[in-house]
Image (cartoon, rainbow, N blue to C red; front, side, top):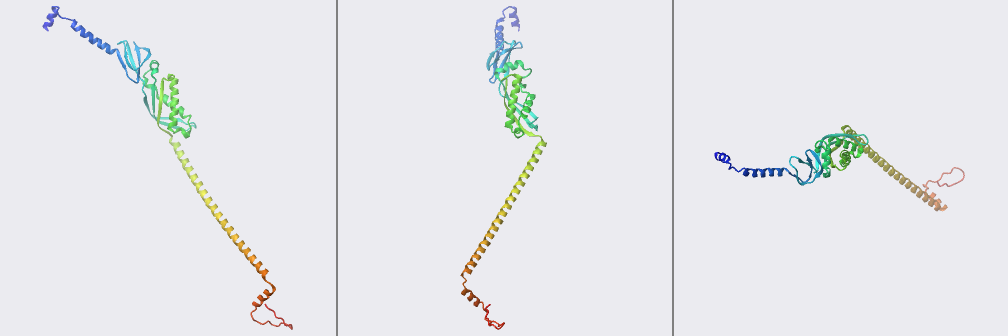
Amino acid sequence: MKNILKNTANGSFNFKKLIIPAAIIIAVIILAGSITMIPTGYTGVKTVFGQISNKTLTPGLHFTIPIAEKIVLVNNKQQDIYFSGQIWGESAERTTVYAQDVTITYKITPEKSFYLFANVTGSLDNLVSSDLVSSAIKTAMKEISVENITSRSVIEAASKEKLNGALVEKFGEGAVLVLKVTISQMDFEDSYNEAIARKQIAQQEYETTLIENQTKMEKAEAEAEALLIKSRSEAEALLIKSNAEAEANSVLNSSLKPNVLEYLKIQKWDGVLPKVTDGNAFLSVE
């Protein structure tokens, strides 16, 4: 220390040896502070003393003037935002229905990063708000019938369309794009589900009664048909028998000649001699 003070007093201390390294260190710090790396999936917006530049910076290395300029990163990747709870609305027939736990997948268009940064107050992470999502889903519900409203593919597609329309109206065409709407559950209120269950039970009972009645009718018709066939068969049998007997009698009568008849009478005689009832002798063969 005494030597340094002595050398300084003698004017022999070389300040240049300190200035040069210090200058190099300062230059490195300034250079490092003037380089900004924008990663893939992001864009940058440059500000100069707080004033926003009208240019969107693409991914890569960018130089800025330390202290004067600053680059703000904007996320252009797909992002998911989750809304828990139920969103209540009505179907086209004014039937109460709700959407349970909604996830929105969206992205900020790179070309619109500067515009959104310059015109949106607050963080760009809140572009898709719960109010916009709720309103879009309720609007979609009103256009879907009761038969289709619990179909997730139907309500999700309609909600996506309505939400994109709302974002265009708020931020302009193509600034924020909704890529997908996912609804965990779509259902009716409990009272409606209970009414539907009762209706389904009544419908099933009604259909069962119809089937039973139809079966009974078919059985009765089959029995009546069988009885009719039996009656017809018996009548036809009697008619055939009657016709056969009549024909036989006709044949028999036509074949009986007087001498045959006389023979039959004799065959019927029981061997008892006839009684004389008056003065005339008369033999009667009974």
